[in-house]
Length: 153
Image (tube, rainbow, N blue to C red; front, side):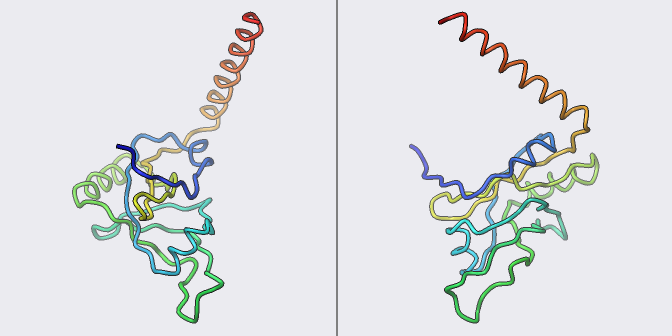
């Protein structure tokens, strides 16, 4: 049974800058005009991050553009958004963020059964030499695949 998932946006930079240990699917509390902007794909989150405050997870630096067709009751583009997770998940995330120096980064936004979902990653920053090693490994694999294709034809 396949669920209908429509990807709105992905954070490719986060996968380059951080090593992702765990990821969580969570809902996001939005206003009506924000949902319309999400449907149009008018969001920006290059430096977005989340934090746990008093048993709730809040998303910072997510900019949702105002809907040009809405009236005076438009939303503030850079307001904090609350993420919806189970209490046990929030406690587990909070323990890891406090103890081990992890960061919560949104990896992607998507629609699932008509609702906006966020893939939240529990990430640790990569050092410069780690990034270079990953790039070197990708280049090596690409070269091997290219040589293999050339020998087969």
